[in-house]
Image (cartoon, rainbow, N blue to C red; front, side):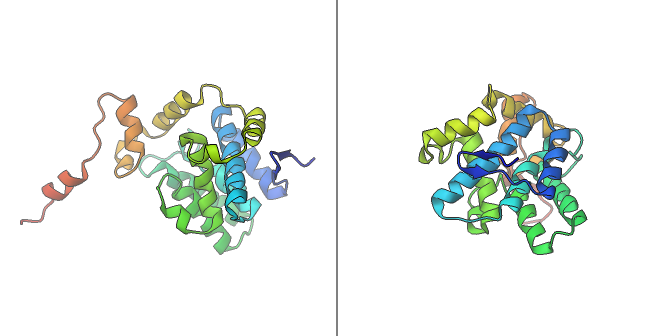
Length: 212
């Protein structure tokens, strides 16, 4: 049965259904509902801005975007965004999805915590970031109808979301603190882990091996 939330249809293809099952198996309610909201909010922002993405590709990007935070899919060294992007690539390639489409999904996930850049790329990339920014940071929230916001949250609740998502971020990459260099993720560890100190870009420049 087709599911429509706030006027947005959840893709119900075999690919989307398998993506949902994979993510549901790997995540808890917090990340699952967040990922679905990212798709819905990204789609709503796209509708508002006149950006049209392939719904199936946007759905996979949204559903996989935080997979690198999960115990099942997180790595030991690279940024968590790359873990999710790489898993999405494996998933899509195993289903024979064309490389150009795979690239869009990969970039949408890999860049979703990088300010500004995704907005210069295709809608499948930009709207993953739009969904994340709306749900996590509240950016653009006020530009969506209150009835749409209420419909999305009714379908995918966010109890104590702010505190819990910060903790989920920290749990997903506290074991690989160097991966947060140059990213917003360093802010998370500075708030959650008292002993953490971010790698200082200026100190790296001044302390490197060049003699001058």
